[in-house]
Amino acid sequence: MTDPWVALEPGTDPVERGRALHKAHEWFTRAGTVPRPVRPVVAESWRRSARAGVGPDGTACVELTDGDLGSYRAEHPLARVMPLFRELVGTFAADGEHLLAVCDAQGRLLWVEGHPLTRRRAERMNFVPGARWAESAMGTNAPGTAVAVDRPVQVFAAEHFTRRVQPWTCAAAPVHDPRTGRVLGAIDITGGDGLAHPHSLGFVRAVARAAESQLALLVPERTPADVPELSALGRDEAHLLVGGRKTVLSRRHSEIVLLLAQSPQGLAGDELLCALYADESVTPVTLRAELARLRRLLGPGLLASRPYRLTAAVACDVTVVERRLAAGAAGAAAAAYAGPLLPGSQAPAVVRLRRRLADGLRASLVAAGDPDLLADWAHAPWGADDLDVWRALAAVRPTPTVRARLRELEAELGAPAGWARTGHPPRSAIR
Image 1 (cartoon, rainbow, N blue to C red):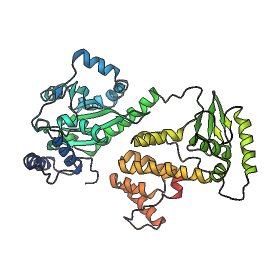
Image 2 (tube, one colour):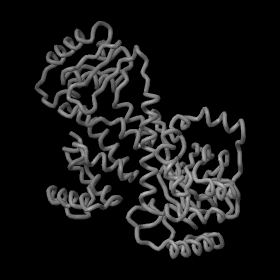
Image 3 (cartoon, rainbow, N blue to C red):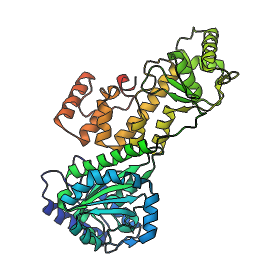
Image 4 (cartoon, rainbow, N blue to C red):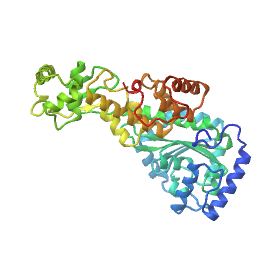
């Protein structure tokens, strides 16, 4: 299968696949082993469900009702993007006799809306607001599994662990806090076999990303007014905002402020000299002259010496990307990545930091396998020649255009088809 997170490839007979999955599910509940044609993502979810003690004949427990549910929903961060969900998904769900559902990070359903008849059918299995549909409570299901694995996922028919849910098909995608990268919950579409199509998974993925963008606009990352801010991604000359005044730094001053911001403990003169200059003939006098000019530019008190250091913590866009990567939020990290770090700099320490940041982000995107995120990187100037990303994109979105570009790259770079690089990305991808 091209995309392991999609339940059915186009052209697959849903009735025949449904029968095969039903037999596989019955075999698993009896023998504990997973036969074909169960997808790996579903097989792993079945095993987690069994380890959690979920029974195939279980029923969802309604944990919140009436006033408790209303209060919890009103305070939940996803309440702020419910108008967006309704605008993008509501009409589609109602017209297609589907349901729009939104759950929290614990798999608890907060909103279930859509076609009235479909809602009444769903109520029979407690697919209702306030009910807990976490994978650990109800087994494999799209919203519960999406928050469990932090990936968009589609679940078809007897792929559901609980028997009474097996007449349904659903697709869900997690929604992240754009500041911290943590999972807030998931957006889900639930309905019949017609949803067992790659488009439904791509749709909920796009809606989740739109919600994250909306949340970022509604709740921007706030930096205290007295904290200097450094923006160094995607530009050769960094911008430094101090006390409401923005200064465009020269390339060398950009390098110095960046490296000192990354080393709050400070750097000795010889350390800073080695970090900035590849040419060993550059003398300490040259560095001291640059630092004197920078001190005059920044004003009194911000740049200290012995060791050289910034006297105030600096909020840097590099740190935002690093923090989101550390939290495992590839999408949020990519959203904060405005481009390679000081791309024109040849300072050895900046080159290493630029490469490390780009490598970490691109590896995270390849591992996540989100075709939209991979496409954004591949079509950006810094990703145009990134062979690994184009190969990852071709694996999940093998359109003629993508395949053609991949062949061109392999020919240009002298890489045989199917060859997997283990070294650094092409320099054009990280410059």
